[in-house]
Length: 366
Ligand SMILES: [Zn+2]
Image (cartoon, rainbow, N blue to C red; front, side, top):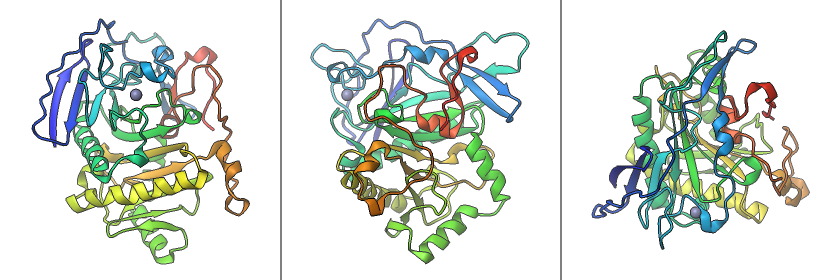
């Protein structure tokens, strides 16, 4: 794999991850872009001992553009996009509308607040707009994994970053604003609430390893497995369809996966994804988190290094009755209303993020 770093017109970093070593990346971003927005604010919510990111500038982000205006396509035929090259394998770049960045910000007086310093990156899985993660070959899944590992290492070394969180949303029901197959990486300046709860609950014990061992022994909730990974339905699933994909060896984060484990992930994960798509008959809406508590410092017992969660939304109605599961609170519309979407589910799941000033803030967490 060849890694080439470049700078976009407004100073943001973009990195190509190429599967061939002989690719030259010298295309220049010629767009006339405004300067990036200031950093968001972190305000302290004393009621639940959590930090809330106020990222009002994200209201102006690109929202469901038509396919011929997709900003994640390569730059071709005179149309300039976020990716200057005319083709690519996997690309990572700083989000133009980030919830966390290292830029200055003016903080209000009289409240407990600090700059939301950190970083938000976009990961494009393929230059093919109409593809999906499930249609990628295992070799590309490995390249995406290598890019996530590279970024986990780099972002966790940044000052102030407490946790790195890789995820993918698919489907407008879950807050996606661009259809091009892509994921995101959030480098948080705090440990997210769910991870903090999992760490507290573990009390230093390898809880996830114990859970995985018992699921593999019981077998009744195991969906698929190979030599290095097992996909299973957690006994206390919070989503109508939820599958965890976990490595058999206890590892602290994605970078700790060895070569054989990295190779074995793609085939198993693609198998699970394609089963979901076949079950629903359409592309399943999903949230995927590579919850590598990853770059949490100091490193402690992590939750699952990789997890997959599927909320079916209205698709659940298309599932045969005997397979239908009703629990949790999932209220989704297949067709979105033309309004700004809520923060993507993963961010609400992982931490707390608001796109509006608190005066009119709506509580979105389901
Ligand atoms: Zn596209």
